[in-house]
Length: 204
Image (cartoon, rainbow, N blue to C red; front, side, top):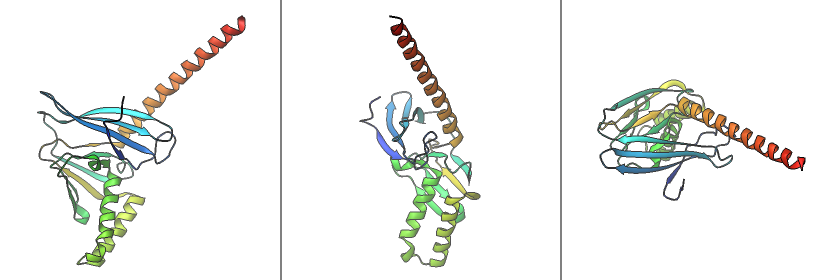
């Protein structure tokens, strides 16, 4: 697969194999007549080169959820959020809203990535806040929840078109484990083939 035509976004989560913070998502948004819009994705680690690919339907004539609601906990903070144009991401407990006007790489991120984006924005606007005490409390809450999610915060993903999706982190862990088994099996098969070839050569 050639990656020259793919956009790239940093997922900001650790690789399931080498545990390094070097996981990237490469993606390409394509439109197929009579089928709809597809999102081709490849998650790849820049350190150990672990790779897993998928194809997502992000726009067709099917019926999809217009509202996703999820509590932000240790089990969900690494869930992947793919927000389509026209969607809105809301954290109601702190009154935060992100309107997605155009689909691009910044809208494919983890829930943790969304919290970090809100945290950075709040910090940068702190000096202009009408209620600085409230803003500081939001910053402290976000820092705490990013460090150790407690389930106090909720993420709402509203999309009237129904083209947005939240992919559970468990899905990626399962895909990673399947890919690991395949890679281990291939390495074992290659190793056995090399040994057999070597043994055959030694007979002569």
